[in-house]
Length: 343
Ligand code: OGA
Ligand code: NI
Image (cartoon, rainbow, N blue to C red):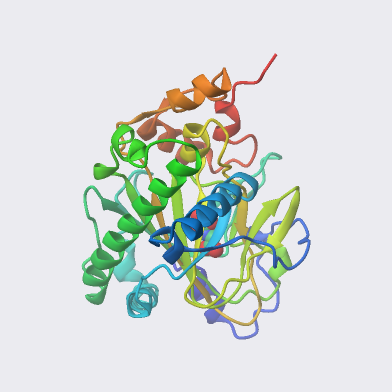
């Protein structure tokens, strides 16, 4: 596994994408100035009017977009910088150093490499991306090198956990539930937290390859930052929108487990990472879910209110496993398979 980075660098004259990366992209609609922006400082504000306004905006964002840009979140810029630095150092290490983390099983707690995906017509292609994925809670796993990674990641994952917890409390409120409802019923104290660093080198033909194809995230809330190079797109009303986020903001999307738990109030939207031919893009992603042994279904008070459950329950651990084994195939998503249709 030399990695896409090495391939992209190996030939300065690489003018076209090797055929194994070939992927036909759906076109992008437009810039999105309309992606909701949520000011986190207002959620913790003592001012009741401001607070109820932002809670309302948050509920609307989760329902209509499944996606929002979080500003004034209180995470120091230095903590984010440290993550980009550590991730770059990791991807810059020689192939021999990284080889030990090539996945043997999908559920290995430390893994890195490239990823192959098979589409519905049985075509397999490689993603134009190198990744590092780590399980960071309730057990913390981290490669020994680069040395700066461990401390930066420990600090960052704790702060992301707190932030996710505070957002989930506010999201409970948007649905008329007790603030602590999710924390108690979904065992958030031992929440499963997954860290991913994605490295997308410049691509000579950005329209002929993809960083990550359209997918939804498992879990409750995914928190993403990137190094200022655009590339994330979200689907909204059947069209793809660029996400142009202000510097130091955090991009938040609601995952499959939140859609199921909320009985469809929050939406887990499709998103993808597209490429460019100039700059390397790095994204740092933390996915926050319930504890692995939680059997997650629609929340009973919401089912009572709606008169029916719109999704089947499943143990979170099994959900991840089935998504891991099936996610290589683009087709009907696991989330769609969990939906109970009305007759
Ligand atoms: C992901 C993801 C998008 C990005 O890691 O699940 O959607 O912009 N990443 O890297
Ligand atoms: Ni994603």
